[in-house]
Length: 143
Image (cartoon, rainbow, N blue to C red):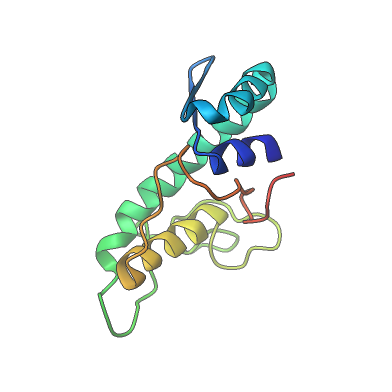
């Protein structure tokens, strides 16, 4: 949804609070805030899905982070012990989606997050405050 991306780029913080849409930011972006509120029924499911994704990624990142050394070789990162059956994520043990060979989409995103934090010093902004366009689970831009 490009409206959501436009709102975030304009400095608006957009989040879901149950069945409420909470929009905060500069008064200059009020027109975008009003458009978001008018499309609340479309925006809320996107925000709830992003919250669920952040929860899936969050616990994995917390488990992976201590395994990443600040320099040198990086071991194969695992979020849970005793995983590795066929058709399962080698990091967490969840079922793999079609086309995935080693890690589920949540572990892929968690690994990228942790490597960027530990090795590159890049910490992502809190959810709802990013100026980047929201993406789908595979990293592609949402329409």
